[in-house]
Length: 198
Image (cartoon, rainbow, N blue to C red):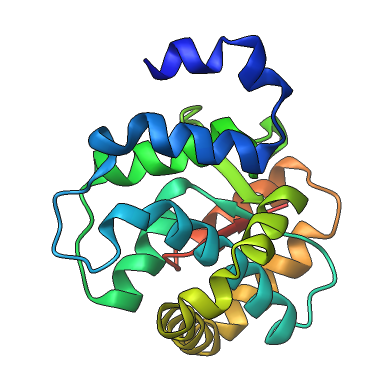
């Protein structure tokens, strides 16, 4: 059913917000995570807010002007789980994330070769302008005010607790990515649960 939707010309004419709305409707019965989480049906919107929050805190706490990528889908899952003290079912989380990606609300792709990451199933991702527009159009920061605050507070604390590592990674990501730098970035990312790339 979803494949038929994606392959239709009508779907192709939709902007990313319209695509995501259509995909959510088509896939609703398949997307409910097996988890005691108040917003399980709207996990996609929580994922969008998580991507937004990571970028926001990197700019606020890390004074970043660059739009860093997040290394690995599990970085996003880790922040949600830390923020709400839950354990998300991996498959359900990934189903929601893949729909968001398919709708083109994010940049999400296999990690750039220059980072020398041996597992080519690992992605790098971040919110794109359509993802930001979706958050604005559906007023997610107010609709999920408590959840947004939990995500923000959790990542702010985590960033401050790992400030030296984050600043080291961000500085390295803004320089030439040669093999020595790639391995140094990998070593730094091993120290944290919410990892970064450029």
